[in-house]
Image 1: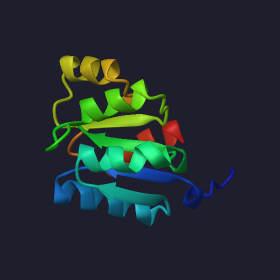
Image 2: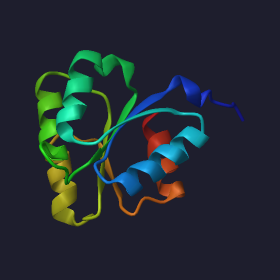
Image 3: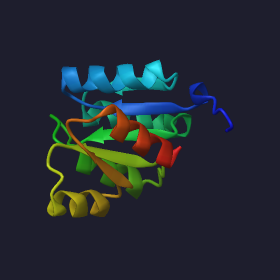
Length: 126
């Protein structure tokens, strides 16, 4: 089996909840991924618009203050940023899945996020 150098991958975590953000960031960093964490959609756009090529993946919460995850994703896709976006939502119902696809997200992961589901999704897109 070929060992992948996970430290070459940079992930943007967009999560307003401190506990969820801390858990996801810690799990990814323990696996040696590089992770930048922002707390809302406005901060995500401020980071991604000028620096999108620095990121290999975006983990995006949906329900955030200022600008929600759907709006961020729509904005990114409209300006041609094609970094894979994984929706993180506590509402994994059919309408949420459809809304995330319509907003330009590539996939979704249900909260609470488990280590297995997180790494399965990250590895799928990296």
